[in-house]
Image (cartoon, rainbow over all chains, first blue to last red; front, side, top):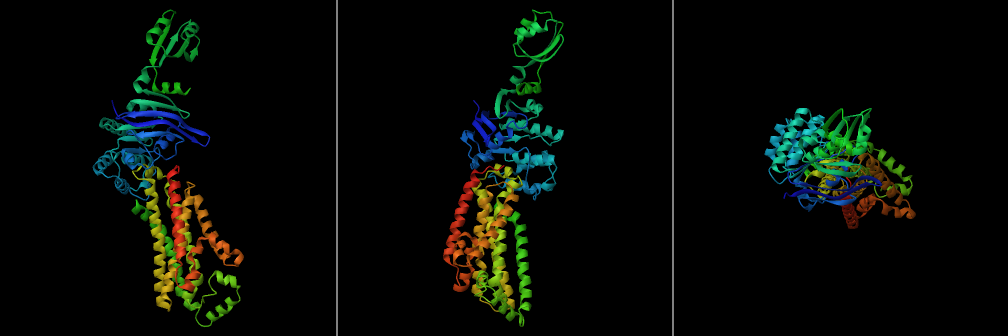
Amino acid sequence: MKNVILEIKGLTKYYGKILGVEDLSLSLNEGEVFGFIGPNGAGKSTTIRSIMHLINKTAGIVLVNGKEFNRNDTSIKEMIGYLPSEVNLYEDLTVKQMLDYHESFYNKDIHKRRCELVERLKLDETKKVEDLSLGNSKKLGIVLAFMHEPKLLILDEPTSGLDPIMQQEFYKLLVEEKKKGTTIFYSTHILSEISKICDRVGIIKNGKLLKVEKIGELLKKNLDLVTIESKEVAAILSELKVETIEKEKNTVKFKNVLPANELIKVISKYDIDDILIEEASLEDIFLHYYE
Amino acid sequence: MFKREMKINLKGFLIWTTILVGLFFLILVIYPNVIAGESAEMMDEMLKMFPEDLLKAFNMDISSINTAFGWLKSEGFVMILLIIGCYAGVLGSNILLKEESDKTIEYLNSLPVSRTKIVTSKVFAGLIYIVLMVVLLGIFNFIGLSITEEFDEKLLILLSITPLLPAVVIYFMCMFLSTFTHKTKKTLGISLGIVMLSYVLQVLSTMGEKLEFLKYTSAFTLADIRNVMTEACINPVMIVVTVTISLILFIVTLFRYDRKELV
């Protein structure tokens, strides 16, 4: 059985009377890439900021590697690499000075890894931080989060601002980290990223965690989209008791939640002109939870 | 981290010190000409017409301004108290808050460093600059006066040290207040307001027995220039009070910062 690296128990955060996150619990195993998805304002950043102690939790605890993560626990902080959605660094420094400063906080030699990452992400160390473009700031943020070889990576919208080539390089980097056993908490609203790299996904809406599911299961288990053309559409729908997506005269499109053989048993009783069964995309699944 | 704090606060220190030293350079150059001949006597005569309480507020009742050192003992040190007080206030309100205002706190907080260490590194860097400003100005005045006239060297050294006491208290007070907000813009005005209010309260406290209690509300009472001039020593009580208040403010700052929401 794999080690649990990050465990969140009953995390609740209220901003005064306004709900940020409520009773959120989840755990991440060693070497797992966990996608955390939700639209703007769903509570993704509140969750991450609570984990990182940037804001105070109203309730709940966070354990890292089985130990409660207190805000001044530097040994746990050493195990974490954090990339915020907006990278704000010291503008008076050059990239080299920024990386040197970062190195000075770790009691191990991380220079070699730093050089590898700088070369791989094509970062110019002579540039001043204030002169960096959004994409280059993000690249510097990635190097800072990865260079001390953390056991747990917490990434908030990590690819925003990166060009497509650099995004591909970043995905490769994540795969390598995963192979090394690094646990990755990956917050995003870009669904294509989730299906590419994540093992499991957590869907958050209005501060509540709606579902945690393996990505493969999520794609195949619940949702197939079925389109049927028949004069007996009304009777079919009545028997299936499914949620209709589109309906036009004798054609209906609905979300099927029945096992395939049960669906076929039902529709075989009717006169069907045409049928199309397709696997729902991640976007469809995502919208299904948000409707 | 401490080295970085020293580096980022160097520019502000140099600007404030240059202004202060430049001002006193001008005064030391111009003042001997101002008081040459009959003008010094005329000034003394003119001052006799001023209300006693006002003269007392600027220590002019126990010091003559017919020498540069005399001017320094009265108006000069009031100016030093105010300028170093303002510097300490601005520094205190900015030193912790800058990371939040610039949003770099999200990065700093992710590093393997405790909040206590963050506060301590910043506090000591700021304190060093305040001490350095007091020392540099003291050395400058000492050299300047040595060139132009004879003066009581021990008294000048003691007087040069005294601005440190209110400045340190103001520094910690403004730092503590900064833990209640996230933006430096909000605290700058409050810091300067505290310095000015503190000075006004100190001046009022010298104007009659009824207002004497106000001295307990002003950080500038800790400078106690009048006592230094008459007794030729710094009252140890003032040092004890300064250290005690500063320590209390430092501890409550640590306490508040440890629990503060940083974004």
